[in-house]
Image (cartoon, rainbow, N blue to C red; front, top):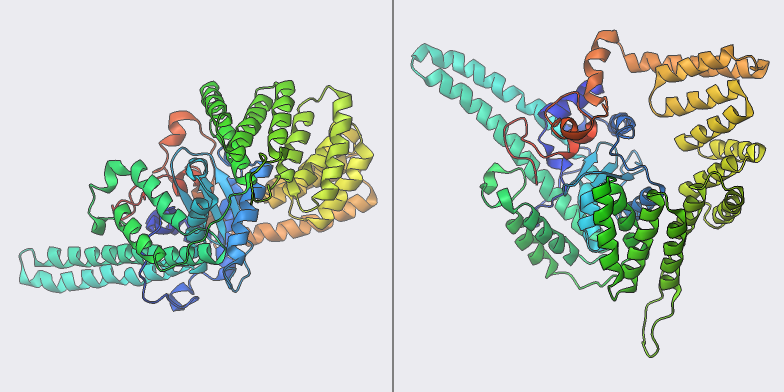
Length: 560
């Protein structure tokens, strides 16, 4: 699996790792699961995606922010559900996430994992524009472009081989004939890879357009976002011929999409308040330096002066979140109250036909709890946090972010027994929730239950792909003085399972192959210039390789 992944990273044109959309008129979409995709089964695609995600989650630029993740997955999965069969024969659970990056981009990973750059989230002015990007990336997953690309490369590998044989025959004629035949074979293989990339973009474009319409979004948002991208890529997009790009020129895409939109009935869709609030959070998290905070503050201050109640509320909410990040919880609560007042204020008298305002209750509740948890020395405030979190958890039982906050609040307030019971129940209901095990380990640590603490950490590491670290934690748990007979039995059983997983991870080729392929996915946490210049480093973070624009293996431009 890792060898296949490494080949993907080094040889495959990054057509499916871009956020741009392609021309509209596509005569026939290929049948899903064709013979060219048999080299990578749906199950293997998912395992490959999970392998990459384990490392991405450890990257410093992965935005592990509850409200942002919750919004992106609610929004993205609504698009997926609008397309029958989008989850495929493997019934993929799509996962949408945001990475901190100042460039407009998005990318799809194998198995239904889709990333959006924070800059793209901030640049999208409407949810329809965001839907155009996510719909396109969903299209890559639906059409299994990664699996089909592997099959295509397998076929293309025969072309240079055949060219070498022809070159050997031509060498008997003397002159440059042999060199010409050999280079011709290489050129044909490269051109076929380029054609496949463009075809993949066209297919994803068509699927994305259909998804937008079926989900009730304004398809003109696709053109609006194209125009913004055209401005951001003006430095090179109009200087490179279309046939040298894996993606056609932006001007061509705009014209093609506009032609298709004219055939569709106009749909007007109001943006949710959650969209504006999530963008405010992303703006603060985009650049957490002092300069970044100052720029965010200026933006929010200008936003508050706008007439739109959504923009005004988003500016006030942004000031609340920024104040909390800067340690001023009093100002944070004051700004949050102002944002709630703006949202709850009735429309002006005499205004008819006003659409009912959505309240973004989940985000406001989570932020109120967040501000209180940022005051660990104030026991009175922490007690209020517990009550708020309990009420919010009952009202929004499906919110994983609030579920985590409830556990954090009980832990911070010293309600260790209650926290332990609650978190154990959560671990039973959501067996792959890493955060639950991490909080539970901290609860056991404060209780002095060493064996249970190491068991909880073992589960956390195992879910993150750290099998050896999980085995180490089980060893610590076994040696803990408070390990009971039941604990020892549980440790033995879990150790056998993890040892079996480790043997499976090692595979039949042994440790040597494992050591050679593993660095392709190792997320090294770098900072500053070193991290930004690591796109050509095979040992760089997966985020850097997937999201940064660079030249493909064939030397062509792959940045949208």
